[in-house]
Length: 72
Image (cartoon, rainbow, N blue to C red; front, side, top):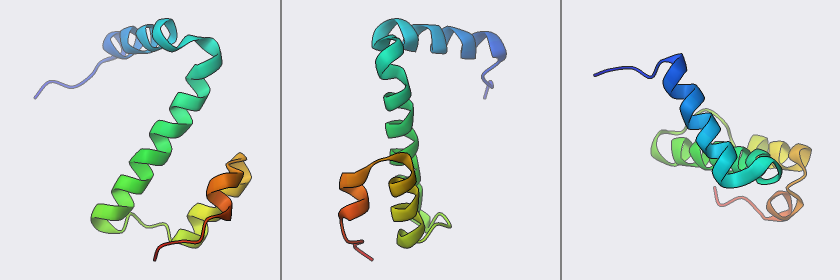
């Protein structure tokens, strides 16, 4: 299986910048990272407890998520 090299990575980042624009790109990255972290936690206990996730959300300014009680 071929790996992603620097050229392919640059192409993907340029396309993301063109599609999302410079204002929405950071929020899309945060959302993607948060989603990946939640998925990882749901399938195998990715290492972070719900308290740590809430603290992370509070630090990043996601007040709505930080207020919600954890499900676990």
